[in-house]
Length: 181
Ligand code: FES
Image (cartoon, rainbow, N blue to C red; front, side, top):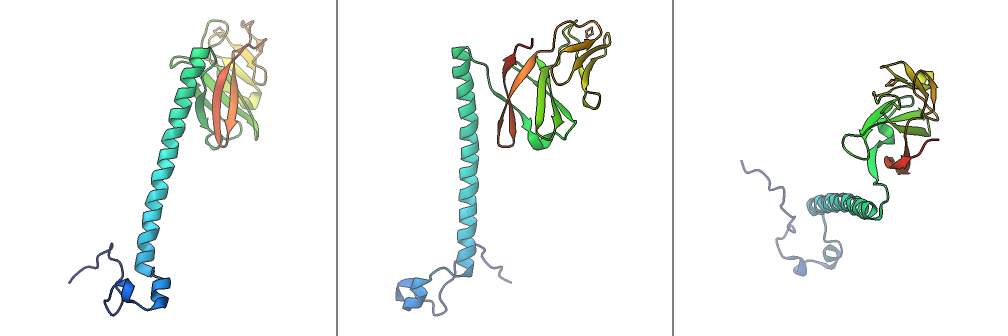
């Protein structure tokens, strides 16, 4: 049994070419099989253009970072999507370099804070405890306020280094280190 050709476009019932068909058929030349063919083609075109736009966007961010570095401006780096972090949740990331550990905390529906994870005492990694409103350093029981990054207990005397955040649609970006006084 012959299987139907999925790319086959419909031929008029009398088999004659479109130019020889009646006016009404020439005015509405796309019938169902051809319509599906056009829909698939448009979908493929849409996917190709979307991918191209995504790649162009990544190149644009890359070029911007190169120019920013040349001008001495901070790099911009995507951390996560807003939807990736629930309220009270945290996510770690590296910024501005691969070995610089940072942490982003969602403290409310529309509020986020990000800091370097290095404790300002002896550089142990601090752990966010958003439900208690602080970061805890397990090495010597140092504590930092989650909203300001300032030390609240234990040996640390200087605040955590704050990371500036930018938002674009659903995406959250790190956009520089702020001096936290
Ligand atoms: S390294 Fe964090 S309290 Fe000592």
